[in-house]
Image 1 (cartoon, rainbow, N blue to C red):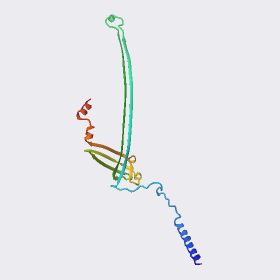
Image 2 (spheres, rainbow, N blue to C red):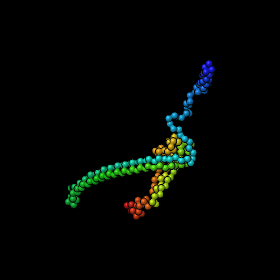
Image 3 (cartoon, rainbow, N blue to C red):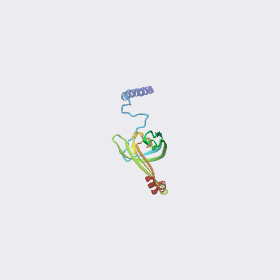
Image 4 (tube, rainbow, N blue to C red):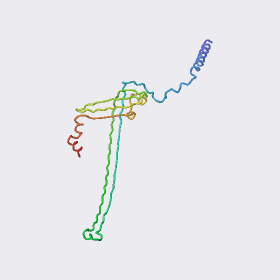
Length: 197
């Protein structure tokens, strides 16, 4: 009998809790300001935070041009009749001119790297202005990688990385300074002759 009373009390408590909680949770959990359940939420950033940019850039350009033109002409003049008939000989002439030109150029480049940049400013629209520089020195040769641009906070992954293809107004520079770079640059006399001729 006591077990039946205890059981009925427990059932009564559970039912009363369900009625009370039903009123509390009757509204939807979703509102117009709710974020998507399937998309990672953008984190808040501040000036000075670090973001790693994965640089995967590849560019190829080619151009071809050709032109061709020509011109033919002839001239003929006879002595005619009159007093100067024997003095002026018969004149004849033909000429031809022809020009053909072709040209092509192909240029390509690729760059793969990782660089951690610093947030230097946050615009009123919420864009992150980032910039960073990395210098690697090997055998007295400095390799300098510089990156600047704008990033949307939602493009930054949970691992705090973003691909360079998502960087707006990106300026990516990779330069070498040192003995190797100097040997690849033409000498002063070569540059003077190229400028003159």
